[in-house]
Length: 90
Image (cartoon, rainbow, N blue to C red; front, side):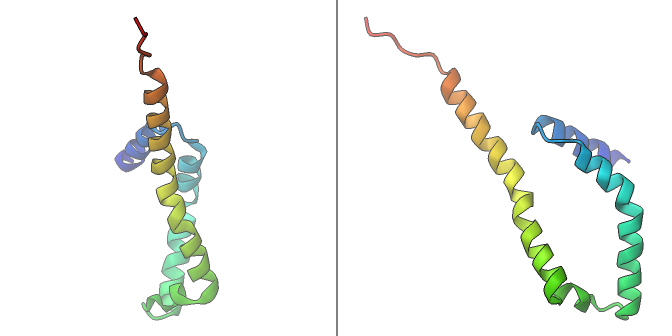
């Protein structure tokens, strides 16, 4: 539970939607059961992750993890540059 509180704090600081955290908490047990069943069926081989459809979904999801911090950093830079006081010519 502490992990989810930390994640929620990070999401609030990055101005992200908290619905994703709620979705993760709600579907965590289902995802864990599905992963366990997949590992049992494949006899503990992660080969099912190397199949085309799960591999494509995983490859598409990886950039989304980096997108949030990058956009937050760009917003901070833009806010810092626009908040800088203008120097007057005297």
